[in-house]
Amino acid sequence: MGTVYPVASVGDVATTVKRAEAVDPAVIYRQIGVRLWGEGAYEREPISGTETRYKELYRVEEDDIIANKIWARNGSVAVVPAELAGCYGSSEFPTFEPNRQRLEPRWFHWITKTKFFWGQCDEKSHGTSGKNRIRPERFLEIEIPLPPLAEQRRIVARIEELAAKVEAARALRQEAVKETEVLVSSMLSHLFDYQPSDMLPAGWAWRSFRDLLFDRKEGMKTGPFGTLLQKSDVQSEGVPILGIVNVQANRFVPGFTDYVSWQKAEQLSSYRLQEDDIVVARSGTVGRSCVVPSGLDPAPVMSTNLIRLRLNASRFLPELLCHLFNGSRLIEYHKESECRGSTRSFFTQKILSRLQVPVPPLSEQRRIVAYLDDLQARVDAVKQHQAATAAALNALLPSILDQAFKGEL
Image 1 (cartoon, rainbow, N blue to C red):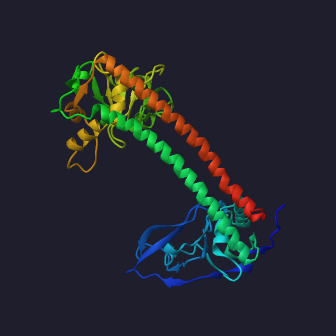
Image 2: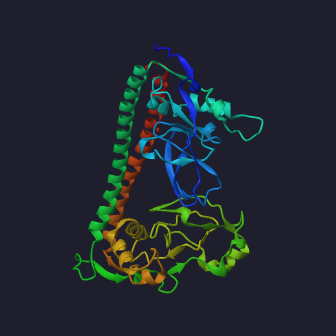
Image 3: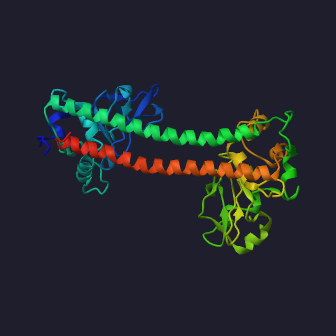
């Protein structure tokens, strides 16, 4: 059975404070922002006095309580940390100074992360204007549990001890995922970390990238651009357009949002994709690729930002090439050397054509793919476990806070 803490309104332990300063056009102001759902204050991009429409800005200091009038109902309330002291907010961010004889600022910091606090912010935000802003005087009416100061500090210390353990557990899980992903990449780099002047293992041979294609002319194709595929051609039904969002590392993501008419698809027939084609991102996450799966009916058209590779599978397995594009230093070396001096990295057919690939015998390729698939399955299993663990860890902190403010911690 917990201790029932006395209740006080925010107005009992904090007062409105306005450190107004007239805006000076010659001054650059550090701006404060407040994240939703108790995620704290942060520093926004600086703004000059000539850029703001406000005639006055309000300086905040360490341990101030700051609220966003519009989004307080969604938990946009925070306690100002030391590193943001001296930042400025507009009149949309009312500020309150805590009475440190009665309120430990870190106690209020943890209260801002609770559903019971968000619920009161939402309730106090409703008004006749329909804009659902919280007025400062209404914010001061919110009620919070308020044990003696010494008890507040004891509970805060306990919360932060437990929160640190939760965060450490979360970091360990994330590190486990990173380590397993690095394992796949390091294995690829170990197997294919050769330069054109290097001696290859017995049975391996250097091949021009174009020699791996089913056809040197049509085996590699860049997605339609310019007048071939315009925004006006895109519609909500018909033949799907396979885009970058469908392409994850070694994994096709199903689902389409953009389509073209059957007539337009016929005009773009040379850009239609088929099973075992490789689609490669040529911009954005350059080189990310996946194999087109079977069963896509109708066969999609590829988008502008993709390159399609159609291999001669008797020379090089599509799955192995995808692994190389998604994780080997061989491809990274090539990108770095070919894109040197460019303002951004990208792939073109010309750049890919200059790639030299060490090609193992087909039986060795199959063995490598099977081994990498097994590693990837282990990575996926770790990720699934991490997702389940993350959900459990995410539920821990709200549970800890619930116990804390009920006097059960």
